[in-house]
Image (cartoon, rainbow, N blue to C red; front, side):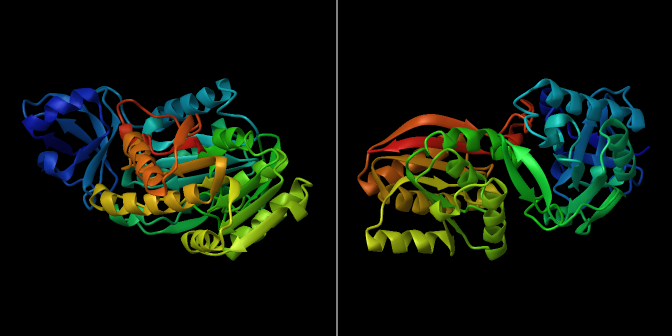
Length: 395
């Protein structure tokens, strides 16, 4: 097995067990490890730190499998880690509510680069790192043994794999191929999920708890749901008794799926208006019309992937929140989110403050929101905390 020697000044930080070692931290490599192959990590004083997966093309050269020098990376290792992840969800009724939830959340569950979502009787996987790809066959075997299912489907068609020197791929890995639409349950509601063609793995499970809480404010209100995708928030609001829900998304197919989800739950479609448009443009149209709402939900896609674009992304977040605040009636409710990891909670709240000032409105925070507990945050890996949100009252 090849060995990687880490620079002495970096070794001091390894005691905090952050699972990433960047290429600049490497003193030298002894041997010729292949892409994704396990390597042993040593200090310059020849003290073994643990084992990790080697990725020569990525800035993150090593993703640590284990900080226990005696722990080998075998099928038994993955069985132990995956079993713990599954059992931790099963024991947490919030994390495993319904029939769909995240089984494995990459570094947070000690398996860097691996995402596994359960959608009813199917498992959907993303192998996002060279190490996860290297052990794909073993991982799929273990998943089938520990979580019997109709099929295991891969959605590794995301650009982050290119940074690892891996191709973008998707397709069936085991069992039977899922249908075009899989029906799932969440918060006593039903949703269709397009496992094979939807965003990421098909549905945003990280908002499950938030959808339920936000919906509690929707009863009797006229709601505007922006970036609705397939309607997680819209359907929840209608089910909670919203007077009307207007849903905006730039994707026609996503809105068609929302229409199906409304029908699936036997909700009143006459209280639903679907608008295919770019959200910022539509919000400006409403502003110019003098249109106002009782409640606005802003759940945009990721605006930023690295800190070099943080300032630009913050302006983009401020712009849509400024428009949203202006469109709310006095006493209206704003539920606003960011899934951009580089934007921390403090900056997010500060951005809302600036938007409120520019809108000449008072804003009170009623709830601070986070990702659902099936997306746990490892304290040694703060990067696993990415979703933040606020429910606010706008004066």
